[in-house]
Image (cartoon, rainbow, N blue to C red):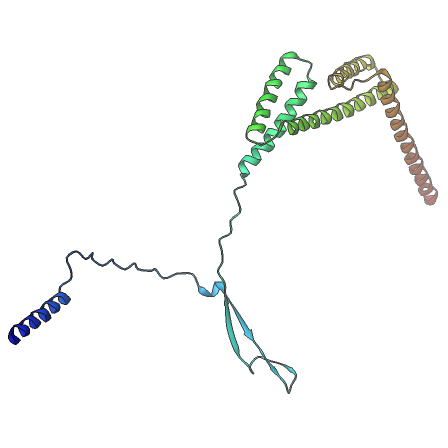
Length: 245
């Protein structure tokens, strides 16, 4: 019985030794280790080195060599990126705004029916682009339209003032072609008056006369200024001539 027990113990030890030497068949093979590439970034870029300087009690001044300590403050830089603002789209929106305003001006300012219909289509096109892609609301489009018409009326008023200034100058200093020039000025006045009427701010005869009076006063002020300059030049020339004599 003792011998059987010794044989069993020997067999068990032999089995244990073989199990340690031979791996199990069902055990998965070991995974290959990944090689970590060495970073090519200089670590000093992300490190602020701070030197703590000592204080010399006898001299009463800072002594860098008395207590030379050094430490490092390491921080991690985060990648900060601006959100996509759609610069290309913003540029397009600005162009659409200008085209929309110009089309609104041509639609209301042109007396030609075909031209008005053409610009009406452009107003609808650019308005839809601004609404769908530019994020404009209907009130904002109405504000753009009012702004465009206000600018057009300002241009109309400026051109009317210049036209009436030419009328006053022709009446004062007109030559042989005076009648032809007055006819051209009258035609321009009719076109500008019609455009102002389409904008909802027509000119009355009183408005035209007030423009002419304002321009006449401005021309008179220029003439008076020129007279003063000529008198000054005359006095200087006389003083120079008397000094020579």
